[in-house]
Length: 242
Image (tube, rainbow, N blue to C red; front, side, top):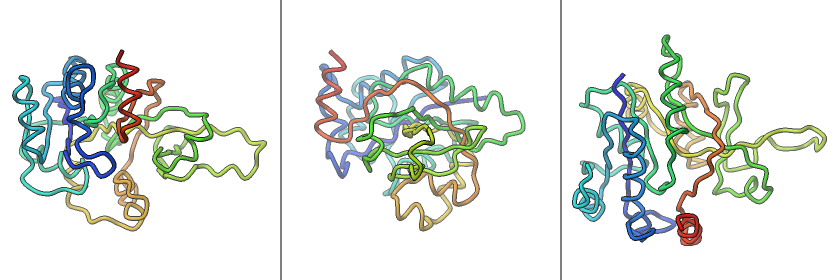
């Protein structure tokens, strides 16, 4: 299989504009993320896909590979779909530009999903982390996922799922990490399908796949990392980097 990684990168993030160009240990967040992804040595290619000249120049001027989006896009999956349409690949892994602590073992587990799927039953795979902190479970910025017995996703939500009506039943809560691995055809299908009510309501693009019957295999990892969504997250990332 030919497997590449693409890093969608918007400059004008709604909650923290310009976050990808913030300094993290002497380099920008997006450069740290790109270098961490390349350093895994898991991919035939690693490319940043962006709508920003600033980010494009940042990557290219530091010896990396980048592509400019031709169109405006609402989400990272749309940006990647446009970029891979004419590339000869089998699987593309979407690494979020604001995750500079992306680790090799988690990405390797995603690749193994497709290597162990000869009948091509899996359309895409993604990561989840077990969480126990009540504040995180109830935080709408933490996306939760519930899965079936074989770890296929049943639903994603910003609400706590499952709802603990019976406090005596022990359930595990999982946080969804926004790292996706797609079969090429699955992401091209996504690009052509209109948004439906669940995705529109929760503002979670992965729900589009579920609403149209695609199968998402979830892979558990114990690597939390830091997603930089706010200035506070950036400060946490700086401490972790040190």
